[in-house]
Length: 236
Ligand SMILES: C[S@@+](CC[C@H](N)C(=O)[O-])C[C@H]1O[C@@H](n2cnc3c(N)ncnc32)[C@H](O)[C@@H]1O
Image 1 (cartoon, rainbow, N blue to C red):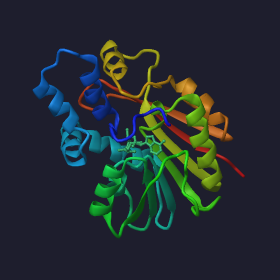
Image 2: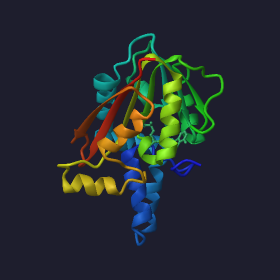
Image 3: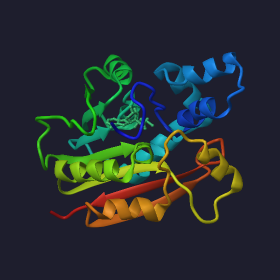
Image 4: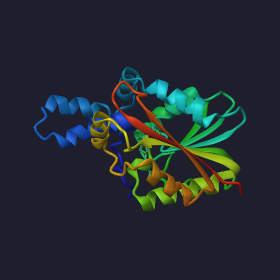
């Protein structure tokens, strides 16, 4: 079993934060608990993301870090409801998988014809995907849900799926020097139990990749928050 409860996907860090409150504030009213649980449903969550400005962050992730090109093959691990597709150029061949069937159903409904979606876990993998065939492997808001062993498994598998020179790109909440008290407090409520420093994310990735670049992004949402984006490559 991975580091995140199956069937209760937080989808991304904001959702995780809010659902995390549900566990951490025992006297919260039933009505408030209900609202937080609703965020686990793709449509409600998407609307909420829009309010917080997370869509702009996703676009920035694609334009500034992923930089996909037409004709590229891209594997999205822990794809949620497939929202990344909304910001990819139409010529990208997209395959996404996620352990949560509710998200996969929503992705198939929304993006039928634009990508292929499968319900599977990192541990099972996708038989028949092929080694060394992807230009990009993406893991957005996933590593901080995985313990080191699970994260190493994901990174090693990403490396195997990538062509030589292909790129792994991730984004996760992070604790770092010089961070505001508010951002640290908000991130500490995240449901992911493995939020790491940029250095710790890097050291995980260096176990599977030859070069790893990091960027810490602060203030990209309408709440205090810091993200660590990692871009990793291997030459062979
Ligand atoms: C925080 S959500 C991020 C969703 C999406 N990547 C995004 O950025 O909107 C993390 C996703 O990883 C999926 N996940 C967690 N553990 C997984 C595993 N072991 N195998 C496959 N998917 C997993 C969850 O179901 C969830 O959809």
